[in-house]
Length: 140
Image (cartoon, rainbow, N blue to C red):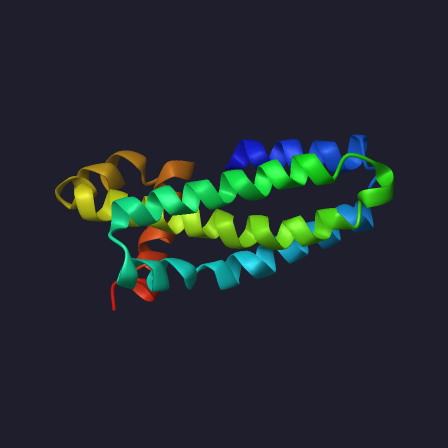
């Protein structure tokens, strides 16, 4: 997921000639729709089991990325980048929350070990944020 953000940013600046404002606007759109994307896993898990739901989320992210690569090929089509920022935000949070949910539900017994070993690292912070999102949006 982080590689996708780096590649999308580099592509927007180098190929599409985005200014700092355009790039920042795309990130704001991405972040806003990521917040909305937090609700998609909750709906998905009510109808589909977690493994199938996770596979579906990865398929969505791959499809949106493939469509973006196919359609945003020149500077004339750079406005489509903002549309795909919406889809990347929705699908990206869909994937991230489901992966965190699966880790939480499959490896619940190792939770204390994980936190004690990674409490001061990026992984520890992501785990903490992921657990709070899971408790808020999925496990109610």
